[in-house]
Image 1 (cartoon, rainbow, N blue to C red):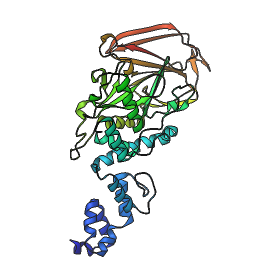
Image 2: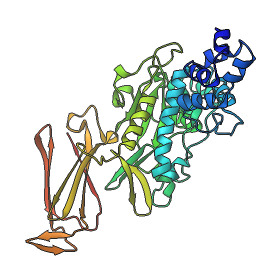
Image 3: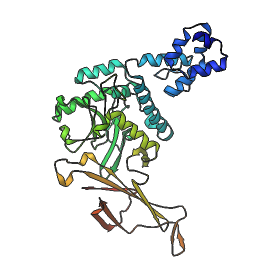
Image 4: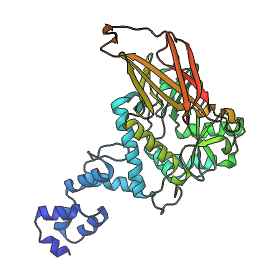
Length: 393
């Protein structure tokens, strides 16, 4: 085989090598000096690094520049040698998609992402909390150790409270904005809920994400089965939390040799990235602060209509922290957002154009499963750009 390849010209040989896996290229390079030189070609390894890791410049897993792509690929494989390589590539794609969106739309939030955690950092968490992290979650933290957190919890005095990459919503005096916690805060907050909220350490659930406004919203990862839960009004047991991902999608969370390992953390962040990328949720500005707002922006999750030049948009979002799984009357709680704006062409009534208009009354009809569950018919809301209410069904 080596002699047959040795007789080929540069271009045919390059094409053949580009069809091989990196491990096979290394094997071919052992045949003779010419094949070794061809197998070390920079353009060949640049193609491999881009196909497998989406690297356009040679760099290590911390973003440090390297002299060549062949070395970059080698160091990446060494850095993650304890993990299944397909899972490494998948987790990197997940983070790349999120960071690309943040870079283009919300760079101040991207700046809060921390450098990846080390294996010793992960081992310390597992020892202190007596858990074993699912493989996908371990890898997610190897790329980024959560976010830098705001120093203050008051959203009126700390704009940093709105930079959570998970996002949130506001209505009345309830404001939520969720951050992905760094490992040191995962330890601290998990210990806190175990000590002060009666949470059982035997559940093997740890706090992974939390709101840093006055309103509490907390996400828990079950390290045994890989499910992610969001806390309800009383998140004291697994039965009073709501799973974020269908159990059927979670598999091989601790199996190094399983097929397509995926836990709820990875699936959840992948879906979050998809919603951001597709414009389902967007960054909104309220006052001086920008944040990811979880009220949907596109159909069918958001309904838009225009009457006489006035655009009205309506959407709803599930509010798990208000849910009470025991009380049937308030088992699931939703907030809705009604936003009105005057289109550039102005308000047109009876052929006359007006550059301003005023809302005098409002009538919202709220349906669930095709049935009217609530009706709001009252005077107009004054001085509110966006008004959010909630109902329980």
